[in-house]
Image 1 (spheres, rainbow, N blue to C red):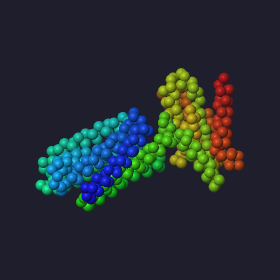
Image 2: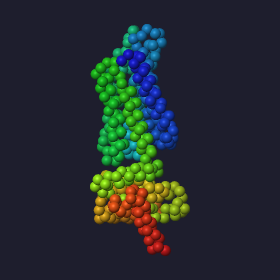
Image 3: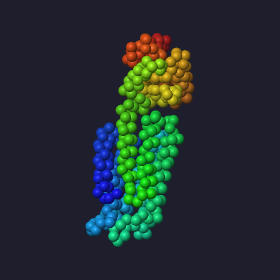
Image 4: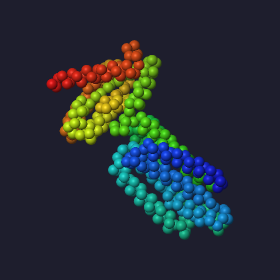
Amino acid sequence: MNLLSNIIMNSYSILILLIICINSLRIFEKTSLQDQIYMMILYAAIVMLVLDVLSRLDGNAQAFYPLLNTIGNSLIFALNPVLASLWLAYVYLYVFNNEKKTRKLIYFLSLANIINVVIVIISMPYGWFYTIDANNVYYRGEFYLLSILITVVMLFVAFFIIVSNRKNLNKRSFLSLLFFAFPPVLSIVLQVKFYGISLMLNSVVFSILVLFLNIQNHGMFTDHLTKIGNRKKLDSYLGRKVRLNSLGNGFSAILLDIDGFKNINDTYGRSAGDEALESAANLLKTCLRENDFIARFGGDEFCIILDVSNKRDLEAMVSRINSSVEVYNKTKSIAYDLSFSMGYAVYDKDIYRGADDFLNAIDALMYQQKQAKNTTNK
């Protein structure tokens, strides 16, 4: 690959990353560690693409080319594990959702990167990673494959975390995370086998773009507080279930409301109300099966959609939720009990005139149960 081709490809790649940066800064949260790591991946990729151009300034007689070539190659090897390190940290946080442990992992990976920088600096006089002859021609050194190996190992660890925890990820997120490493690894194989071919950074840009589209989609259809589907996703999902029902695919729905939610807010504060919503969502998720769907309907209301076409199985799910609530209230460390009022039904196209009619019907059933509870408690 000649210098002009490299400049053109990297320029296009940088332009794509800058577009993603602009959009990311508009929709991401500054306080979110996940978003911060993603932005660092973007910035690191841009820097590496610039350095990649500098590292190609060999075989030319211009006086400043040898210096730029040396700077480019040295920094490329010094910063080579950074992208893989950031990706590993991103995957760990995305899968386990534990910021404290992720920060500890980042400190460990930072230490590994500092050690790599020191090794590169020490090795420069000996040409362990690369050498540049009197004609400013670049040659790979003995430690070249070691640098590649470090990156591959980090990508493999991230890949292992994704695969081993695939049951905790939704299908779209799993496939997007899984895909990320494939283009770079394929490019590394080509780079090792064929001298002069270096498309790894350009392939990383493609992976970053796919990941961004997934993140953006996730943000559009995810409730910020509870991390489950939002009303927009519920409307889309329920509409699809209604359309499929005409083909014989039966389903049911449960609409739930947290009892006494206003009192929780008024007595213990807004943060306690937010905590109640998060606890409710997490509790309900533990009751669901793999193909069940849950979303926040609005306020303190949740909606569960089940691939269940008979009332007996639907009532079994309602019983499971009530049992889980009882266990939660016995083991909780908070001052108030959590309970739900529920309205539920099996969808029947001969009774309900579409998704809105169905939601209105189970909403009325939920309200009836809430009124009955209030009457009993007076």
